[in-house]
Amino acid sequence: MHSRTKHIDIRHHFLRDHVQKKDVPVEFVDTHNQLADIFTKPLAKEPFYKIRLELGILDEAYLS
Image (cartoon, rainbow, N blue to C red; front, top):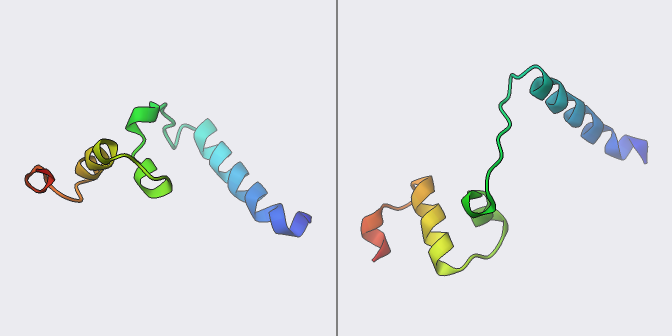
């Protein structure tokens, strides 16, 4: 089983090292501001439009 999870260990340590060196900023993002939600879960109309606008996929003119 170790050979299947070894890549996870390598990635984890790589990221952990860079976070500790402060090469990568880690910031808290409130649940209402998670832009990744548009790609990971079904959303109601309003949150979907808000995230889509923030990502620059469509401008406000298309939302009405």
